[in-house]
Image (cartoon, rainbow, N blue to C red):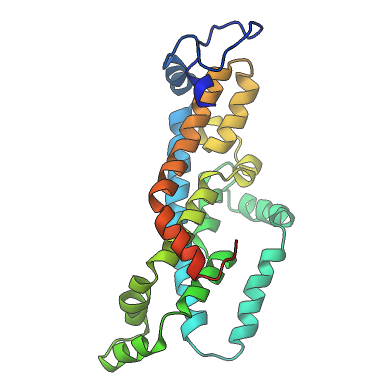
Length: 247
């Protein structure tokens, strides 16, 4: 994909090709940026990824802390109910989502994709709860003796000690939101409002024969996630190991 993005766009596709491009050029990246609304797709994907990253991660932290550190009737049963939602295929919720957002006029809008991402996620809640259970409760008791309330225990004790798990959730979340395809494909019709994943699919129908430009757009889509994972892999691996995730 990387080598194809640097090939000459006007090269004869029927001619024998070589592993290395015969002529290196950045023209495919320039054409992809100017021909397709790549800047809009990149901005839309970035907004949705950032909103989902901070919103869903924060809500999952608070919910996981409640399951790990507070006692209330039916806590274990409610936690099992949250985990049971992982077995519900998201495809079966398409019609209810469509009817609900059509009634409030949010079809063909990025808010349709952003709003559900501001809620918690059962998988992230599970990871964080498992990690929070490894943090000694005695630290909570010491903080309460010093006058800390429940939220102060969360933000001043538990979260600073749970950075590997939070980094794991953040990386999972970012990759999922960045590569999200189904919901934008189902609810967004305007080309300028598409995300990168759906925009690349749209470009394939418009510029099917211009492979260097398609590969250049794909590199732009993949590169940010690869860079983020490269810098976060240390925390990601440690958090995955300490959260009870087995390879």
